[in-house]
Image 1 (cartoon, rainbow, N blue to C red):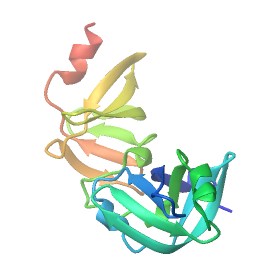
Image 2 (cartoon, rainbow, N blue to C red):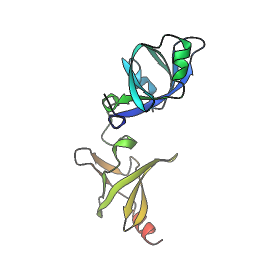
Image 3 (cartoon, helix red, strand yellow):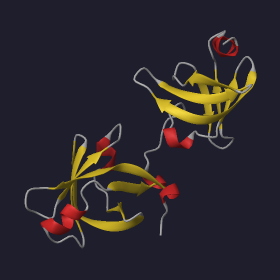
Image 4 (tube, helix red, strand yellow):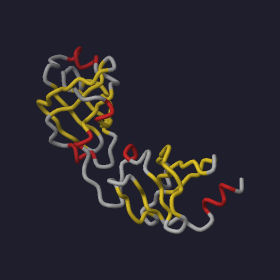
Length: 176
């Protein structure tokens, strides 16, 4: 059985559709159409991930309609309302060399082209302007912008991100 650590959250069950056993799933993904054609999903029920075979599954914008094996009526579907929907990490679409998933880079080392190792990423924040990584440098939290124009290379095997930071960014935090 898969654990949450082996999976990612695809979305959340909005509830059943009309009086049918078909459920609506709000998908939290950049491109929900990447997930059209799935064979199964995992739904968290009582803190356990339960696999459900998909008898029908269609995606429209950020919403999916799913008919699950074993869910035969509206009342059974209603029990799933609000539950998180998961998929195995292997189901994530492959990314380009400068793209990343937020969950995968925690613990990666940030390497600046000028000053070398800055430390490991302790947290990641997806802000409206861009994503930032939190790194602790000399006991101070430094927020590193993870913009494509600054990222030189993401090395998943070495768990590192090579970045060309603007001059003075880290010093600004150290002077506080």
